[in-house]
Image 1: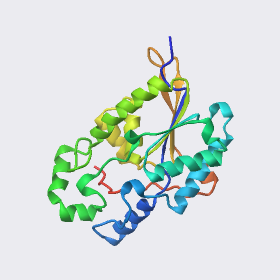
Image 2: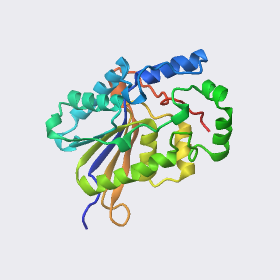
Image 3: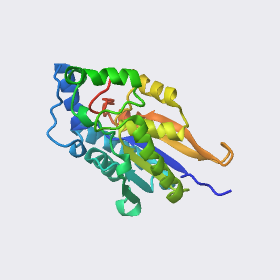
Length: 255
């Protein structure tokens, strides 16, 4: 029976961004608005985020060549593209030797009207949306002009179908964002709403944390990807790069 999945799949959140830092400063100061001049798509890595990406790349470089990524799928956001570039560079993987695809389906969850607002700012400016979110639930709540988790999952379904169609037996690295990482887990691990929200409640996805899967031909009827590592951050600690797990902006309350 023909294998339909990649041999290996890594899902990585980008390194710490300047937006993560600005969000923390605004939240700690009780400000309503996060001070970011760029569009969210243009927010770069912080210096620490670059260090984290290089540390992760050093780890990929220790793997045998036959276990290193040969396909890279990346969000178009600057912080994700920078992370992917730095990982390949530090790993010593020739960019020309891999399939490199920037895929808009891996972009950050769109926050719409709530973009750049802190928790305080949301409660202050749009109290009715906080109530709506509480009633509808985080999984289904769609801010005006933005996306729900279900919307993100919908676009990721077609991305996973492409991976199955075009990259079977390959070694695929995906570099994206916190909600995207969790939504991919929802799809690949066949979770339901309660399970993925519990994952989200437990902890934020670490910057440059690795969640990896390996194809197991004995799993299920035709074989499938099996979780191998979950939010793996040992390479960062070994390199002395602080582990950070700030939520992407705006930060929604855990519930």
